[in-house]
Length: 306
Image (cartoon, rainbow, N blue to C red; front, side, top):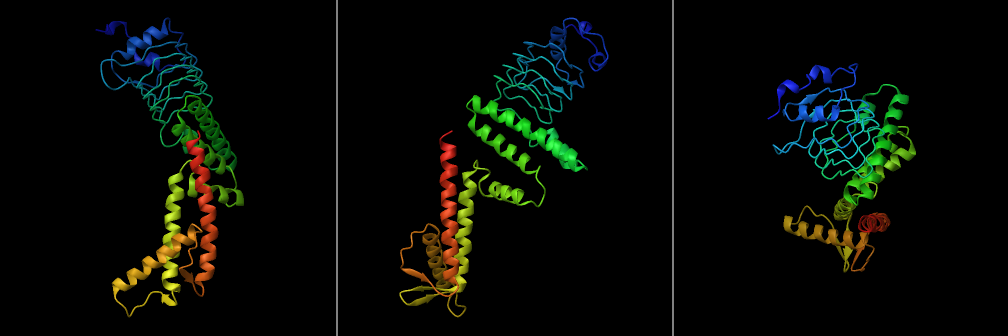
């Protein structure tokens, strides 16, 4: 059992102007063993090298939330499942620390050193602190600066994930890095619009499923256009006809869908031919199909060769 009489009161931990605590690492471990949340602790520049904050008594980790860990030394710290949400880890040294299953949502990660740190199954949150601040920033200069900081953080996280072979996580961070770079561009600039389209179509090369969904949507869209504009099969017209039954129109639509598939994939069997305006539509679809298939190959190869 922990002797509560030896525990330093929380108001002392929260005082940023307090004198240096002797044996701060042991004292913080002792405080953590009480199981009570540790909130707003001021641990800036503290030497916590090798500290053990793994909660062995429950399935959840210790709570060290909204704390100031600026420039703190947490090298080789044992932080499995720890909840650091809302804390500032700016320029903190987490070299070779165990952060597996940790909660870092809302943390300031600018300049943090994660070299050799274990980061599997970490909760990074949907957005970085700088990302959220940038969305609320009023001045353009401040917004761009915050997005630059977010880009730097995501780049560092990507590099750490790649070094550890966590390629799926690295891909996520790369996509976020590119989004932060895009948001630094003028809102309606050509480069930003192109970057946005690349994100939509393939997630900057990290989302091959998006290419497949786009392809299916494009094929269906053109099939609908062919259905109403008309096609020719063995001299007979294939087009929507309000005077025939629903089933007959469904069969015509599937014929148009077949033609859309072979046109998109540039197979061009020649059994079904476009007529009228459908010729221009078929040329456009063939061009888009060639481009999309090439894009899918690039994205797929990128994902498989990592």
